[in-house]
Image (tube, rainbow, N blue to C red):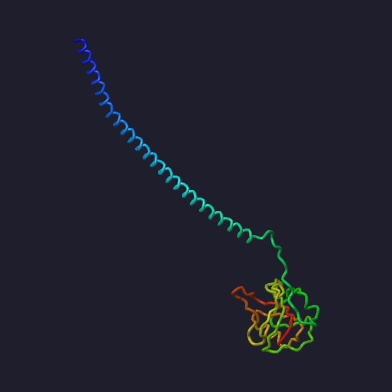
Length: 231
């Protein structure tokens, strides 16, 4: 009876062990499957995180590149503006220079190479007065000719200059005796020999009038005129 019990105990114990092993095997397989699923899930999440980080990095780089390009363009415009401003601004102030002396015909009297000094008149001016200061040796000016002159114009009463071809650096050329200039010039310069310097004292009626408009000088005027050429 004891031997039988012992054998029966052995059988029972073996059956228990075998049952335990059979029960543990499915549990171990399920744990492995669960661990594999968790690992795969973690790997997928890691891949998504890497992709998200990569996308964000690419976006940041794109923004940086765009901002950098805009800054470069703006700096280029600033450089151009600075360069233009620098080139447009003189490096040193330019001193004013006197206008070049007008060209004169050959064999002209040396007096006609210098701008004359013109003073104010005296007394009341009632009529045209022509005074020869330098007599030329050329032919007399005729009405209808085009003459070339240098001149200085001042107010008769105070001698203040209002115009001068000398200051412009270019002689004045115009038809004479045909109404293209003021009456005092038309009447006073016809008959004057080429190469002469004459003084013309003009009452207001033969100049621009007593109430001249448009910046013209009003009242009696005095001109000193050099007749350089006539043709």
